[in-house]
Length: 265
Image 1 (cartoon, rainbow, N blue to C red):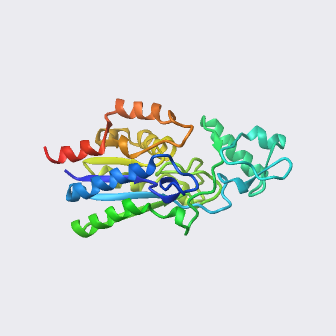
Image 2 (cartoon, rainbow, N blue to C red):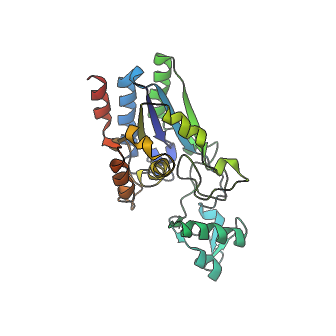
Image 3 (cartoon, rainbow, N blue to C red):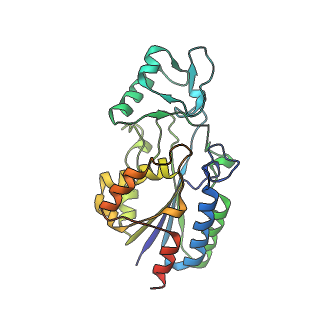
């Protein structure tokens, strides 16, 4: 059985307690995942990791926005199009018109724009893969003579890019924001898709939601490793609806140990 391990954003800024957007418990997720990779060996056919790759002046970072008095907005602020139209928030990192258009497109999709602490800046320690899981992946590569790859996302600074497959607002003039059909086709070539990573409440949730929207039959191959993902603090239940739907379509919510035990059956 061909199995791919699909790890969403296992990066220092999320997984290390010193990270700028640390997800509580994520370091333990990575430790369990690393142990699984070590033990599974050739039971894993391929490893694909995604990675946030942001610029400092990003629409989801505080320095893009200012309060009416000119001060920088606080992380975790929720910004609506009406707030920008009224002058409560000012888009200093881009045009007012484009920023309002972006926010309205989010709102039309039933989504809310959140400002995050500046994180996963391209080329920095925070954007690097967490050392424990990277070591396990490197050892797996050496022992199995197989390759891993990293899918980078989020470099275009005028849209958030949670899910692995597409940005929150797609722009046909910016190919990196568009739906990644090649990644979908690659994953669909495996018999079993193990999903883990950070954060459960956002990038993992949106990745699974995009899979269900574009290729719901893939859910029958998906194993969601629940002990290898955690939510952003304050968003504990954000993924519940998506996980419930995924299970209804055939996805299996399980643990890293469940996968190891399946290899021994």
